Structure formats: C-alpha cells, structure tokens
Image (tube, rainbow, N blue to C red; front, side):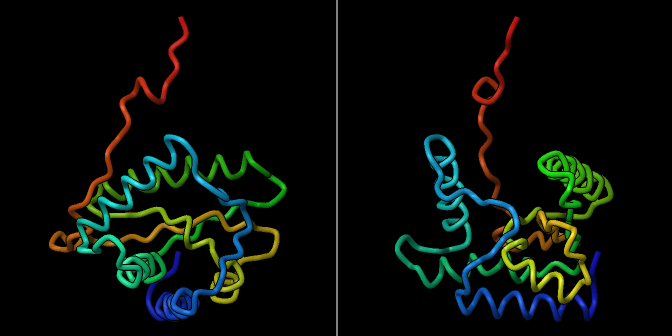
Length: 172
C-alpha cells in the first residue's frame, strides 16, 4: 500500500511515461488483440466511457488524455500494488484475482471506492524503483482507492453486464 509523498512521486513518474508514449513492458502477457464478444464488450465500454466523459469520436487527443487517467490513478489518494511470487505461476495470478475482488468488496462495504487497474503493471521497473518490490515478485495490477467524487462524470458511468446465460454453461 502506498500513500502520501511516495504515491505522488510514483504518480508523477507514471504520468511522465504515459505522456511520453513509452511502450508498456508488463511482466504478464497482455492480449495482443481482442476478438468476438470480448472485442465487442471492450468497444462498447470504451465508447460509453468516452461519451460520459465528453470525448468525441475521432478526438484522439481527448481519448489519450482519458487513458492517462489510469496513470494519474484517477486522483485516488491510495494505491495497493498486487504482486505474486513468480514461482506460483498462473495459480498465483488466480489467487491475486480473488484477493483483488475481496479487497474491492471490503472497501465498498466501508464506503471506499476502488478500481482495479491492469494498466499499472505497464512499467514494472517504475513500481520496483518507487516501492522496493523484489525481482522474484511479478507485478499483476494496482488498485487505486479512496472516497468517490460523486460529481465526477466518470463516477456516474457504469459498464453493462452480460446475462448469466451468456457466461455460464449449465450442465445437468
């Protein structure tokens, strides 16, 4: 967990990299492309967020600015960086997913808003430099958290959810 001046220093370096368009070098494989329903959902989510935040279609500068909000941590005062020992492999990443979900549910239960951010794993070297994370740990994601600014347009945005029938196979 990081807050205060250490967080501000990290935020500044993350924003500098994002603004310079330095290519990410995550430790986990990211999708090279999205296909089918995943591509459709990603596009729908992106366009809905852009609409909510006033980004017009074709305005690449505004879209890039909105994308950099990830690296500004959406203005959150706290950040959890989620790591897994490399030797745990895929199962360690799965465990982290469960931890992230529970962390976010617990935060919500006490009135704190949180957002999981895979984008924060873009530059592991920066996170290691600022947070003294050992090389044996794979950086999975970050969770930015704090009290929600209910007036910010992005906080009124909600993604759609697929019906359960589309994501669960029932075998009887």
